[in-house]
Length: 313
Image 1 (cartoon, helix red, strand yellow):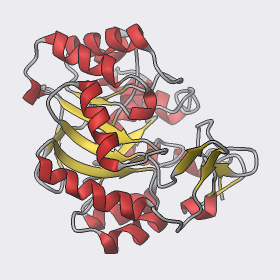
Image 2 (cartoon, rainbow, N blue to C red):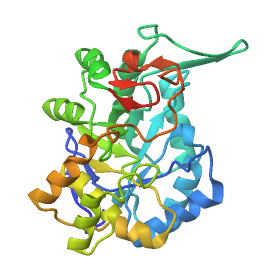
Image 3 (spheres, rainbow, N blue to C red):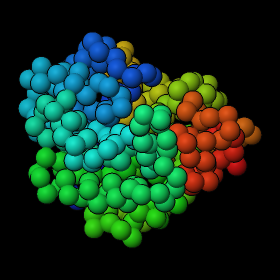
Image 4 (spheres, one colour):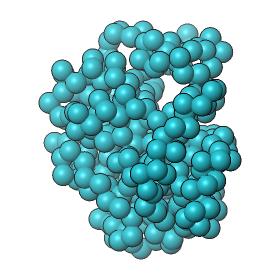
């Protein structure tokens, strides 16, 4: 794995680069753009790639990894069980075939929800309706026996949904991947996961806008350390002990995003305080429906402490 990127250890002893490349392109697919993005990332030093079945680009990610000529054991690949899964093993095998990289390092339940597609349309199962994420997890555990996946985890789980899942686990999730950045630092969830030995991974660690890039506290730290605001935010996240998977297609920004710096205690506190400012404690993503649901579940069902539109209560 890339020598200049910090390495974290998952709860089963598997090593994971603290910084990866997020491969969600803002829409399903991405084709040649994804392939070129991953090739560039490999060239500048990325060894951790985060994709998903629902991103529609596992094939391009795998193609780039094989084309790079970098030994497979130097690269970490994360992909995810789709929300509309029919059979966990079948979904896993499809992802493995698309990636065509021999094995998957980390396989996640993408969402606690599950949707069923039938002739009558698409329906989201209600909380507790079977088969649910507990069933999916038991099937995920069986995948470890195949030797084709090194670690398993979850994504978009809250303290509530983890509390429902954990009593049924023979294997504790290695990571929980969630939206996490200075506007949504996930303090309670982070503490809960740390107590359980679950590493948090931040998707959209830079937000999907420059909401906090122009914050005086971020600009002051960036100026003091002669780095970009993005480097400040990623350094803050890694220093908190969380994995980050920022997405960029620009070679310069890709390279800069790998170069975290040490923040002082005062710098860390300044970034920690951003979400405490009026109107700043919120989600920055667009999957929130106007009625306060996300992919068919209410915030209450998800265990998210939010009001309509992703504003944190």
